[in-house]
Length: 419
Ligand code: BGC
Image (cartoon, protein in one colour):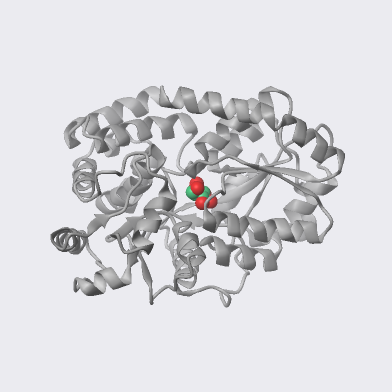
C-alpha cells in the first residue's frame, strides 16, 4: 500500500514538471533528475550546477526526494513512458545497463574518446558506464557502503575506541545502551536496512562468500550458516536502535549522531556530507571507520548521469555536462563535499579530509587485491528485481517477521523466483 501511494505521488509529480522541462529544453539547458535533496547532497549538487552555469548552460532541477533513489526511478519510468525523458538522470549500476539495453541512452563515445575516459575511469565503473562498447553515462563518484560514522565525544565519554571486531562493536553497543544513549541511529526504510546488511553480511560471509551470494547468486552461499549468522547480527543491531526508527530518513539518522543523541550510524559515505554540512570535522567531532571485520573490503556504488536520447545525436548540452562531470577539478571539488571519492584514478587526494583520503586509499587497495565488490543494497550486484527481492526479506526480518533461520530460507526462495 505504502509503495502504491508513493508511486502515485511520484507519477503526479512527474506530470506536473513536464511543462517546465519542455521550457528548459527550449532554452538549450539541461534538465537533471536526481535524488540529492539532503543538506550535504544539495551542497554537492550546487558544485555541479555552478560549474554548468559558469559555462552558460541553463539548469532545470528535477529533485525527487528518497534516499537510494527508488522514488526517482519511479518518476523516471513515468517520464520515459510519457515520451518526455529528462536530459540527464542520476543512476546506479544495473539500472544504467537496463536503460542502455532498452536503447534509451545517448552515445557518449565522442566525448569519452576526446577526453580519454577509457584510461582514467576505473574498470569497476566502466562495467556500468559502458554497455556493448558504448559510453552511456558519466560517472560522478565512487561511494562505498561499509562505513560506520560515530560521534567522538559520545564514544570518549563512554571509554569506547573505534571497534575493530564484531565483538568489540557489540560490547560498545552494550556500553552505550547502559549509559542511556541510543547505540545506533537507523532509519527503517528497506534500502537502509539493506545498506546495513551489506556490511554485516560482508563481515560474516567474507569476500568470497559475499561475491558468491550477492553477485553470483549461488544458492548454497545464500543459504549458508554464515548467512544465518549475518541475520543474527542484524537482530543485535535491531535491539540497539531507538523506538522511532521506522520510516526515518537516513539524513535524520545521521543528525542523531551529529547531535550526540546516538553513538553510531552504519551508512555509505554520503553520510559524511551531512557531518561536513553541519560544520563537523573528522577525527575531532566524528570518526569514520570500516564496519568491523570489513577493513580490507570495499562494497561500492557509483553515481552516474545517464544521458537520455533526446532523438538524434547527443546534444551539445549533454556533452558539456558529461565533460564537466569528468573534469579532474570538478571530480575533486564535488567529491570533497559529497563524501565520495573521485571516479577517476588520476585525481590528487590533496583537497580531501582524513576520511576521504582513507576512502581513496581503501578503494585503490581493494581494487588491487580483489576485494572490491558492487554493493547489493545500491544496485551494483544485481538487477532491480533481485535487489528488491533481497530488500523484502532483509526488511521483513528486521521488522521481526522472520527469525534468522527463516530469513535465510526466504532469501534463497526469493532470489530464485526473482531471476
Ligand atoms: C547514492 C548517493 C546518495 C544516497 C542517499 C545512494 O544510492 O549513491 O549519492 O547520497 O543514495 O540518497
